[in-house]
Length: 92
Image (cartoon, rainbow, N blue to C red; front, side, top):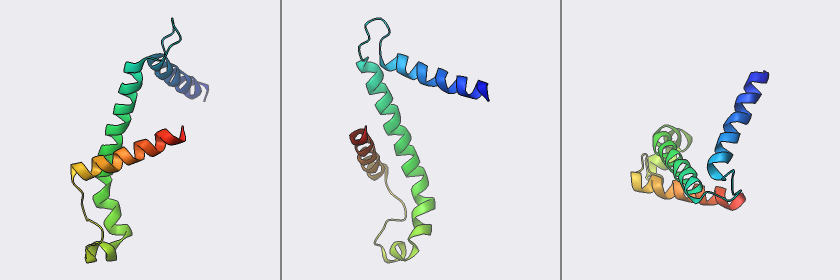
């Protein structure tokens, strides 16, 4: 159990070292932008990948009537991912 907590601390230490310079204690803009882009693309892939499995099962009547799309395009997934990333950034 101790090894698991050390791995978590080590992971978060690495992330914080990537985002903030140890020497100057200033925020590394490249690290922050990279971190946000990775989060955005992971969110994009999850939305696009899971939409077709989840939405038709949750809302079968709405999908049948055409009120909700059964599948979405990459552009639509990008818009939803951008909305989720912005909502998450607003909570921080």
